[in-house]
Length: 117
Length: 109
Image (cartoon, rainbow over all chains, first blue to last red; front, top):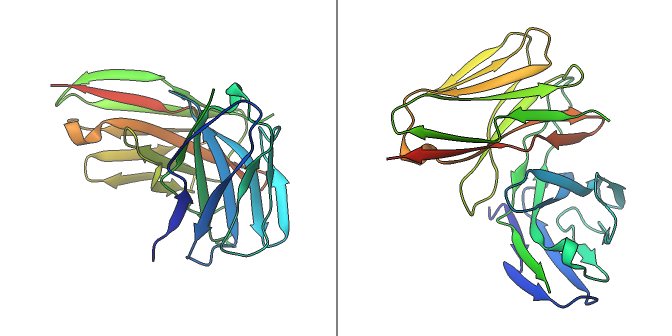
């Protein structure tokens, strides 16, 4: 299994440009997540999905959109890039344990380093 | 909203010294997870604690979950250069996992 893969690894955008960050997992996980990590900071949840066709906002969804048409893929779309979106973006996936009080282990991709100039 | 807070933000230790990071929640957590992120890498799951007062060990790492399930700690005994990185705690809020800001550990040779 490749686990969680993300493309591209690096990208530089100009202000106002658009792009899609790709995320794919081959572990048949229901849950998928997008986080951003600013330099020296923690992880902030952008969007998440509990299954194909279902998405929901996290802590910092503004400026982003997602879709989940298949179990494997969870792309993140930036429509009008702004310098504030310069960050490292991590995609993660998990399989629900369905055990009360026990959280799922999240498996992270290698990240996409995005710079907006 | 509910927060998961970590202290300290940074810690410098001499190689061989011990290290501890603390995680606190404003509300009771059903469980807590710990992750490690090496410089330039991605977070990797270390462990999950579920029971009140639970203590788990992984070699030189000791994880504790408070009796009230509102706090947790990670203690590393006799740090090595391979321990360098940022350690995050994470707790469930509704159907999401909220991460603390992490403690960045630097090892001085």
